[in-house]
Length: 477
Image (cartoon, rainbow, N blue to C red; front, side, top):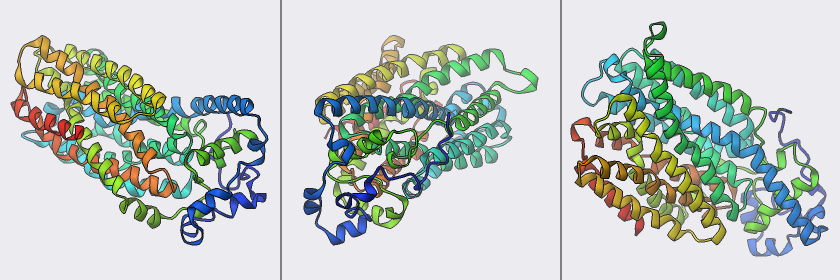
């Protein structure tokens, strides 16, 4: 397969260079804003030649074929990469069950501090990373490179000997991993229209939910078969194996991922023109046109002066704060009183159910074009789940509550993520800044949330689940 690293702004601009009506209007975000009112610009726009000459049924057929082609190149690799992103971030929760805390001699809140420090680095890097990605326009190079770095850092966790070493590794892991998820959201929104984006975000996010299932299975397998192999503890094998897999997949991604529609070589000329035009047609304004037209400060200013960004920020913050139970989900499941292996296996079904409900809800949201009820209705289920978990110690109802926690929170969350790009679509620099800022602030809750689940608060975690379902009720408002 041909490498995508050589794709850059030298790729022909789909025949648009000779179309004055098309190119003269898109020199930069600033010139567009200052020179010509957007309404007059949009009246002049017309489809590029190879799209304009298509009959309606030909256009429909070509677009369906194009979307399938985009899905084939983007989604499988992005899902695998995100699965590993989430796995490398949260495998410390499974490692705790496998003996990490005892081997490193962690006491008091030291383990929880190591959990929360990751999100400090995670928050700091998101906005600069997304703006940089928008500027260079090379996701096929940038995202795999970042993945190699975090894979190496994750594998290095196996060499941690003390609280200080683990703390430093976790901080830098969060700092590097921050580039991936907001970068993927921006990447997807640069290829798909608004009616297509919700399902694709759900497909992407299924990687994180699947990682919760895989984490329990992998850790159970390693704990049962590799503990003490070559004198290495099971939790150390966990980081080594998952880190090596991450680096290997990252190298494969160099040869599979595309860049943006204008700079991707595997598109035919009619496909390229249609890929660009359908995004333009969807919003009424062109998307990413070239590195020279992207500025850091202008996009940030547009995002941070838009009230809609702050409304979405509050919504996503409540979602993520409620979903932080997944950061220590094995610890919560352990309160059921089963052994180490069975506890890890019991963490799998809630994530599998979450993947199913997330797909179905996002597919229906895209199909109907409705967002509000697709976001809020699952939250009622989540509220009920946290109330049940906080008010009983009986095994059956508690596990039912745990089964509903993950899908209850994340089924609506992925629809809300797509809502960001739908609400703040252009210019791309604004969308990049808004996606990163909202994701960064929403994840700020993960800094303190780790301290909400000390083992001493089990099994009901009643004082901790109460603020969680209050946050869920806030989301409903």
